[in-house]
Length: 307
Ligand code: ADP
Image 1 (tube, rainbow, N blue to C red):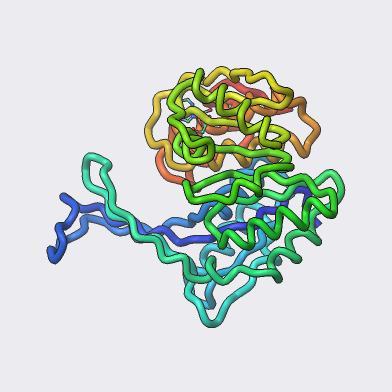
Image 2: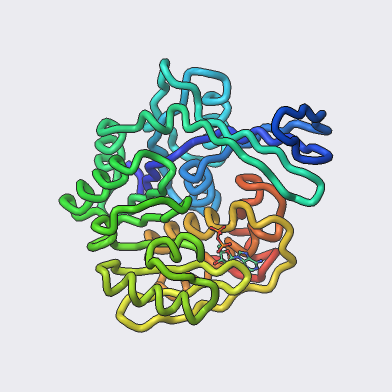
């Protein structure tokens, strides 16, 4: 049983640093190659566990060494990985990332085993959410699985947090009745069908999503913090000032922190303040999973003491 159950993607990120991004047909030599654990599901599970959450991951990896590495890394962070299946027919999800010295990148994602998630995973996830728990979903797994998980959770009165990432075509019917929706600016723009670029337009969007049946709509705004709407009025949650180094992982840290705070009974405004602090801390450090904070990091880097 886990208070926070993440049903989502697990990827190995292969990051090669190159002097310039190759043109079609060109071969370039990479200065370095690094392997990182990734995937929004795995990142958010790690984020929640590092902040003290009791977390179970449900997903699929291949029977290859990449899958093994991802499980080991999650276990090191204290995530229960017994809900992750090993798929003998599909490789572990992998992202091939080339980065140039200016930080520009090209990425190809092979979903691999993430694309074979199905009803078994939905059942494993739903059955392991205990009372007062939370099911956390993103959009890096098949849309049918996300929809089914939301429907089954609703029937069992299990609270669901959907992080609408990455941007993707989305069945609007899924939104109505959702407990918690977290989306950044481009994701929110796609959801509401108009540009969301600042506090004003995000506040309008949060209200619109709440009107469409989302219990708590949260829009993250990078360095501008976040806004939320849970009762018809939108409110801003002020950002923390940090020197941004690499915003990769900020959204995942935000979601993980929000999940831990809300399942821990923290009041909503304070929970969102912790989430902003976690996002800001992740943005102030390089890497994705490696930048996800622990409680002590929040205190040290942005002066937030988690009770
Ligand atoms: P995503 O990574 O999904 O695009 P955001 O960039 O909106 O998400 O970041 C998530 C949260 O992290 C924001 O709501 C904010 O609280 C925090 N954050 C991100 N970047 C910064 C930054 N440069 N300065 C302060 N806080 C940040």
